Length: 394
Ligand SMILES: [Zn+2]
Ligand SMILES: [Zn+2]
Image (spheres, helix red, strand yellow):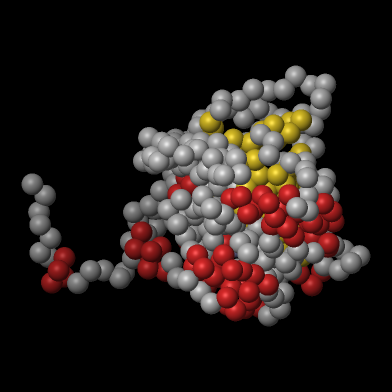
């Protein structure tokens, strides 16, 4: 069953960019060549789950290209990275994104490392949906990284503590039915106070050849992060939301793929979302317009610059590229949900993915050992006057 569907026969904008749901990526360069002497790998025109990932390459997939106003065609902010040696990482889980993540048909227990850029709900709204793999698919804690706050309550540890507390009925009700060893969020709080001009970034993850660095970005209040992941000489960065600034741009100079938000202009944002122009301008103050995104890319000079967190509609695509290309002429793409980027030592290839709308969960990875012991059932039993009337099995 296809994810891609368009019935009006249109394929491009007036400016010539592919329209959404045509199976074509909105990209200036579907193949960015890093090594002109290399023999380049060929890929199927559409990515589908199960496609082999070579041992030396990385796959970056947009699992949420949109905004707080979640739409069927655009989940809120989320990206995943798969490394050729098997490690997988999630960067933000906005509302609706876990549908896209699980549609990649990778066992949910492998999506257990989440890096949060900031606490806006359009970046963490599906955290509990990801957490819900506990018991039936994931028997180890969900691991979450994020920033400390100006106060303890504004830090990622408090956010996750409150979210976990909100699962009490859910977890208690499942005791004795499914393993509970995965019913915990293991949070690593990144010390925001440690950043300074002399210490502009922190190594926050270093395992199995993968390094993830965090750095401050400028978004509303204290505590928003960007991340840069490095593995096997390849690199990709995620900036969540924020006002464009040179500090973040210098953290990601010459990365392979730089993923940064790009936001509608205020009049269009106001008109399309039925809000006042003043409120639209206030919102925009904390974000990056396409022309400013181009200026950021001009400093960072990524091999591929990617805009996301944009309302991708037939009539918004041309203005995005016009704005971006007024300030930058390097390779760029505008993300839609399930845009897939393969990064190898020699090239960067951008395609659209197609996933099954009604996929099943694949088998768990690795040898299946004995399942964890089950806990005793909860004492919070259903009253006898109801339970005693349970209809007997036939
Ligand atoms: Zn935000
Ligand atoms: Zn956002």
